[in-house]
Structures are given as C-alpha cells and as structure tokens.
Length: 317
Ligand code: A3P
Image (tube, rainbow, N blue to C red; front, side, top):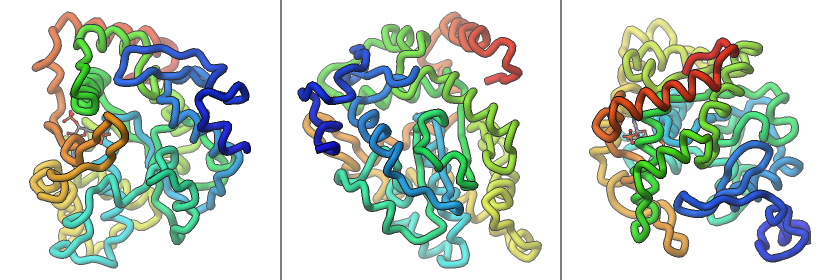
C-alpha cells in the first residue's frame, strides 16, 4: 500500500499531492524541500529515503542536470574498470554511457531493486541535491564526485534538451530563461544544488570531489588522474608512462562517444509522449556555447543573479 500511494497521483494520501506544483517546463514540477522536481523523481527520492541500502564503498556520481553527467559516467566507468577491458574492445564502444551507470532516482523499467543486485563497489549516479540523499548514504563513507558547470551553458543545454524531449509544445527561450533565473528548473535552484555539494566538499574533501565541466575540458588528463586517485584506484607510474590516462580521455571524449552509432540511434526512454533519444545527450560539448543563444545582456543578468544568490558563501560558480 505504501508503494502504491507514492505513485498514485490521485490518492489523498499521496505525499506528492500536498506539494506545490508549477507549470512551465515540459511537465509540471513539484517543490519538495526547496527543490523543483519532476513528480515521479520526487516520489522515488521520497521512497529511497528509508529503503536505499547504501554501501560504504559506493561511488556516487552527482550532477546538476546538463552539466556533464554522460561524460563523468563514461570517465568513472572507464577508470574503475580499466583492468578488465581493452580500449579497442571497450563496453563504452557498445553501450551508451548513460546505461553503464544507473541513476538512483530513475529506476530502469521502474525496477527499484536493480541497484541492489550490483556487485561492490557500485558506480551510481544521481541528480539529487545532497540534502535529499537517502538516510545513511551521505554518511556511510561512500565517495561522491560532483560536476557543475557555468549556469549559462547549463541553461542553454537544458533548453535544447527540453525541446527535444517534448517536440509538440516547444518552450519559449526567454520564458525558460526567466524560469531558470528564478530557480525554477528541474532540480533547481541550480545554484543551491551546486552550493550544497561545494560546502560539503570543503568540509570533507575525502568524501566529495567537486569538479567543474570547464576545468575538465581545459585539462582532461589532469582531471582523469585526480579522479582515479580520489576513487581509490590511482594510476601507477607504468600506467602513466603507457599513456593510460590519455586513452581514457580519448575514449570518453565528446568526439569519440558522439561519433558512435550506438550513441546516435535509438531511444533511451519512451514513455507516453516523452521520448528521450540516445543522441540527445550529445549536442555540442563546448564551453561557452551560450553566446550563440542568448544576448550578452541576458548572460550578464544570469551571472548577476547567481552572484547575488551566492554572496557571502565563498563559493563562486
Ligand atoms: P551541450 O548541450 O552544451 O552540448 P548531461 O550529460 O549532464 O545531460 O549533460 C549534457 C551536456 O554534456 C551536453 O552539453 C552534451 O553535449 C555534453 N556532453 C556529453 N558527452 C560529453 C563528453 N563526452 N564530453 C564533454 N561533454 C559532453
């Protein structure tokens, strides 16, 4: 009965029905503990609170959506499994990066038990804000890698993603910009999401590795080496001499992954009128693409809003 009530959007004891709802994006979002979420993810996040069995050696890849989830999934998978596979015959040549690391709050085919069957150490992904982590997961000693990105590029990426997701009613760019700037976007406010993880990464650097998409782009090899060290599987001197970090960077690069047929054809999800094509996770993969979509004035406006929101925190996004 408990399970049913969380997913039944009409029942009176449905915890979702009590939450504020707002329309504007491709589907209405609910406000749960200061974050705007798609209703079914909110339901899963609530359910995970008390049911998720964290393991101390879990690795959680956490991101604000559109900030490099696909990339960090590929990188972490390639790094942690590097002794098992050859680069010329690697699983990432045959499977979409989104499929090699499961999302906690987006159970595949609705199966919540799937992640329980994975062998340790598990690689898991989430867009969940840190404050909504299931009990114990945040404190069990697991490692968390967080990736954030320039909000302007993340917004532009989001807008394109939503446009593809819901072809039949496209969202006006300015309207979407205003919603995002108000903090109203999936998993938003964007800056709050980043801030929570940043704070924790300062307090517990061994627990959270805080990365920025732009830094990873400008020095990918350095970041792959950092990532391996943080994940407890540092590259040996021999591996570095053999150019293994460079191999990882190449395999997981936007150009390589987006050129693969398996990442370009077919659908990831098909649910009602929502279709998530595999190719939608690879658009441009560039830093600063926002200039091609919004005016300098809009860019400055968003920068100012974010700066104002983060004033006094010590965190600069
Ligand atoms: P753009 O829309 O700016 O191109 P997420 O994976 O979190 O959904 O983020 C998607 C963004 O990451 C998209 O940005 C996408 O093109 C970019 N991306 C996907 N794979 C990448 C890779 N291997 N390297 C760099 N960026 C990548």
